[in-house]
Length: 349
Image 1: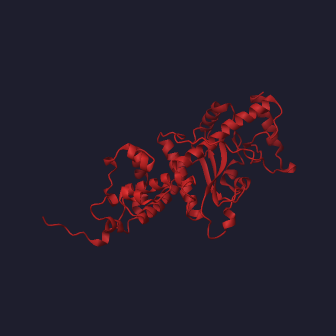
Image 2: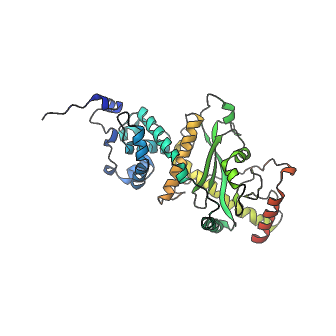
Image 3: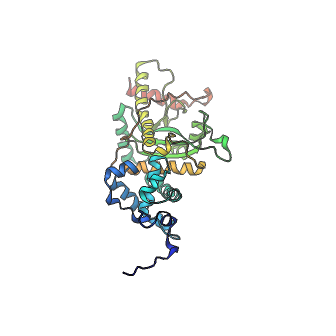
């Protein structure tokens, strides 16, 4: 039988590297492997991976039009393999039939595509009455704390020392990091995710954030934040020195509800090992590290929308107890203090 010649110009370097007998480019067949295999190597079941491929297909195809395109399926698998393992190991490339260099390109493409989808998956609408009331009910079922719109936290993800402005990324624990200010609901769904240099204090990040601007005119409900944050009418914090049973009950309910944010990010780090520091710091610029972090946040929310549980992979390390804010007496918000007293009196007495 006469064989048709294949023009060398359309071949990716992976085909030259691995040869025709290797599973290269779009030859990896998702249906040929078990769900357990996909969960072990890529962190997600087949249905969710296929959903991601469909979601990102147009963007990923457009980005690779000028060269021999690695299929969207393989690009998504490469990125998931990195996010969930934290490594560009040759063995991961061998599974799907691409080189380490192509793995890196795939992660870049998929990360950009996911970040573009962030407004679709990470949204915080505190003004829509039916949605707001449902959120209040879900949070109140946790520990009895009323009027909660979301729980606020700021987390750190270790990165390599950047080439410029390195000191801006040294956090209070002394390592280089990107900070991520998060708000989540009672189910662990992220409502807001903003990245900042790790050297900024949590209070400064909040002051400069889009979240702060959004909530200035909020008329009903509040976030819960720990003792690092200033008390505001839209941000309830713990009492520094509770003196009554009602105040103690307020603090306990506050802590139990606020813990959802900590649990959520620990679960995200457990699923996406590239963020947990065990494999080492993210070896990228702050900008690219921030994009990877946001991409994982989008994947977290997308998986919840698809029916996966937020805390399936939750670790159980103890909570770090935050220090109180360095707040001057003249900076105190009198209206917010009166509101907190009212909450204690009406709901915890």
